[in-house]
Image (tube, rainbow, N blue to C red):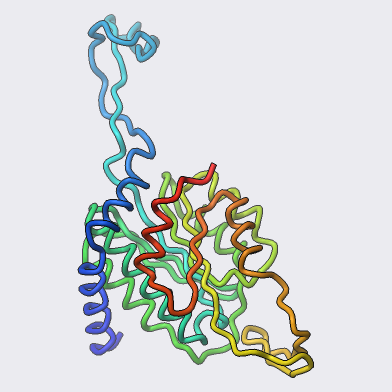
Length: 273
């Protein structure tokens, strides 16, 4: 951890706190507030809704008791970041990951929600335990900044990342899943994750040059030589539909887009059914 990286993380955090204006904070709060109830206390029955009476406990105590609940005051946020070579070796993808994380972390800090980070590939896993406040936000950004762009080939395994997120979280949380989703076989683990948690799937679209058919290319994750055939295995629209069908809220981040406006528009859309 270098002093220069720490200072850059601090400046990114400060900038994001300024950029997370009233519109974004309001949309964030509207989307995530009131997503559930948590137990508050037991109280004597005062003649209200009889369905709230806790009969077994009332019989033991000799008086009518009811359970009272309140809206969850906080909802943990966990960033699930794909740190495969196809993300880390692309400068635009690294910058997008940082900016999305910074803006959403700023929203969580404003509402005093705990923040955590889980980064994974097929080979590695790294976790930052949950914490509160701007220091935690800066620590998460610092961890992302320290990821090396030049490293051994690291392949994507989104199914593994989804399963680790599920195992990590004990209570309902909001998960920010950041990846280029250049993978297969993750649909069922993602559906299971979205069933229990509120998942925002940030789809990073790479800025790629035109490649003529027949050109020899090197796979950034495996190092294998592949021959371009002039087509893509899966379009951005198809991936977005897959993410939506899994129960997530897909957010498409294209090269050069205004990420603040993109997130704002996503939060204003209806929740997925």
